[in-house]
Length: 573
Image (cartoon, rainbow, N blue to C red; front, side, top):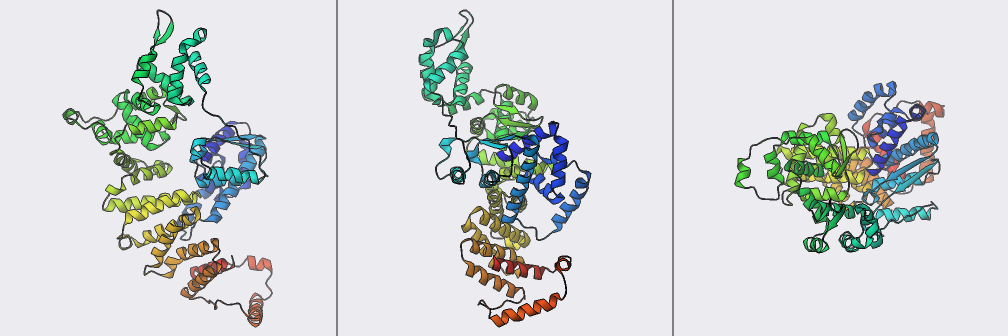
């Protein structure tokens, strides 16, 4: 997410500075191993703040193995609060040491609810010193009911100072000044008036579109430099005639189509991978699909006889293509292996190079290659992207492939839940359930229980109550044990409490205790005599134990009793 990118950049700044050791020592002193692992998972790119301690590294594998062995590892609103608290504590350490931090978060209009909830948590914590959060969003994509607008209003009502700076599109005069300066015609501004009006009309003053439009005029030789007169020349009538029916998006697609076939293939693959992509991942695709196969799967033009006879060769010159497209301003290098598209419109235009009826299948094929060819570490780093790509073509998958992809969706859903991204997790759990189909309970009952139970939890926290109830009802309707149904019973109680149905929650908690074979008194107020009797029994059981003695008692290990106690907790919530 944009917030993770911002913190990753902050970490790089910290690690390169002279206060790196001071901040790292403070972090290692403030957090336990479990919290550091949680932060490292939720904030990829920030591991440098945690992994320098040998003790942490030696305990990391032990903790992760214990976590994998735990059958009761669940993620809910408590984990969200814990993650938010840990991130705020981390920011307090960094901001206090640097004495001034600015976090810039771009494209807030696309942020999910988990990111916005985190921003809200940070902004309401007055204990974080010297922190300025700057965010950018496109006003035309954020309605009054958008969750970002709601968050801004909520912050303002809470007394948080928010400064809004509206950066609109360029006016006709601004566009004219830009064109005049770009063409070096300050001595003859009148000559560019008609051209500037055309540019503004086509681009509506959008800076990115203005630059793309001017470049397209040059690429199509409608704008040329005359070395005889030492000035730029063009014909206004020709420009208006040839571009009369074209908008900037079409012009951008046409620009991409003028690149060589190899470059277009790299553009298509990169666009499918997302706004940010890795050279190594693109290379994995091109090394495992021939040029002919890539053309067949993505080409807009129908395959002709000459295509059938084309030699089946791999795509070559990846580095050359990446460099060529970088020089054209289509993307920029972030690290040796990571690239960013220069603008989301460029990515959209690259997707338009793929035939619309082949687009999902092409994405699915890329996902399948990555799932099979990436090593475990690389697959884990790109898990969400790979699974999302595979899901694009899940309607065409059959047999064991559906169960394998369902398992990958469950894995992605659990990872998203670990990072408190429950809206994203719900998408993967729903996809996994769909892939298993009506025979899922016969094929793999354990996975169906996991998909439905954790899917219900993710839907509950993200607010999709209709789907939550579908998941819950499906599990409850099956002839399985109360232990296997317990997770959805727990979520059903929490959901009832959330909407004010306390009586329903209490009744369900008592029923679950009965099914567990534990005492479950009738749902009515106890008499004074009953209360006194239970108090005396408890007093006798405790004897002369002090609070310290009670705290040092062995942990409860019997699952049946633990689950019964959880139901009592929910009754008291």
